Amino acid sequence: MRTPFPARRDLTILCAHPAYRVADALARRAPDLRVLSATTREAALDLAAQADVLCVSGFWRDEWLARAPKLRFVQSISAGVDQFGKDALRARGVRLASAQGVNARAVAEHAIALVLSLSRRLHLARDMQAQRLWKGMATDPAEREDEIAGKTLLVVGFGRIGAHLALLARAFGMRVIAVKRDAARADGVADEIHPQEALADLLPRADYVALTCPLTDETRGLIDARALSSMKPGAALVNVARGAVVDEPALIEALAKGRLAAAALDCFVEEPLPVDSPLWGFPNVVVTHHVGGETRAYEDNVVDILLDNLARLERGDPHLRNEVV
Image (cartoon, rainbow, N blue to C red; front, side):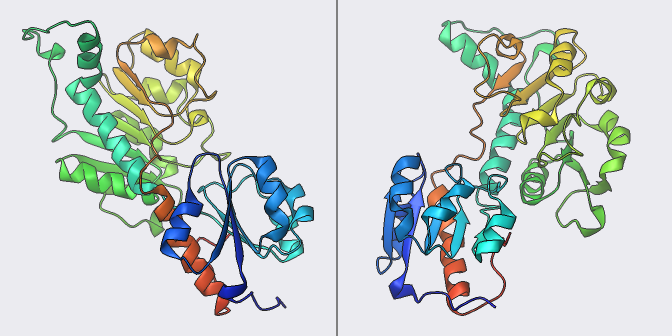
């Protein structure tokens, strides 16, 4: 049985991240709390012994448990929690919650922005701007900008991000079909929701294929040469999931041979994307720098979850928001 969680007035919370200023947002919204901040792993380790609560993501190593005897709760700053040893935390009686959903709106908005960029050829306009070139009117319809209304968007992975993307796409007049591991439990505004096993049959129907799924054993390399070859002529791929969901060499080959009309990619197998990657050079590829989840509201969104979980812990609620351990 767990001992009671410390009272709010007795808590020390350490926020550790190289970029996100969660401590500033927390101190602004909860000035009664004692909040410490660290922007390096070394500084965080120096302060860890004082922490009852740790708000952290990539800095974490399980060895920190030995340096944090007071630690009772870890709030991940990221949605992913692969770096946390769940068994080690459980053995020490330390609770863990993820920040799942904290940037779902941002990623979905980034995905629809990429779809619009490809449709309206904004990337080509930017390239011509850099060269101070004015593009004349196109006589060939295939060379013109396009509309997305009436087009079909296939969303691969229908969690928070995928569902919000479907909402945005429907607002633009797109038809949305989706695949989800457990299609029976899917909520959202897609026109159709199918199990993941149906992906091969759905790919030929899509004008745009948007990847919003997590990286798992089942989704690693999901979009391979066979999947790419089954996409309809003129279709485009948008990836705001993880780079390894796509077989990158197969994607490069499909683009080079014209089997795929375009791609917009926010994530890659190797990041930063190597300077010698062919993906940089395709005029029909938009590269963004894994910024889909970036938002000026990120810190406040994390603090929303953290404050909710602190309240639950103080009142002895057995369930946390985004509970992992």
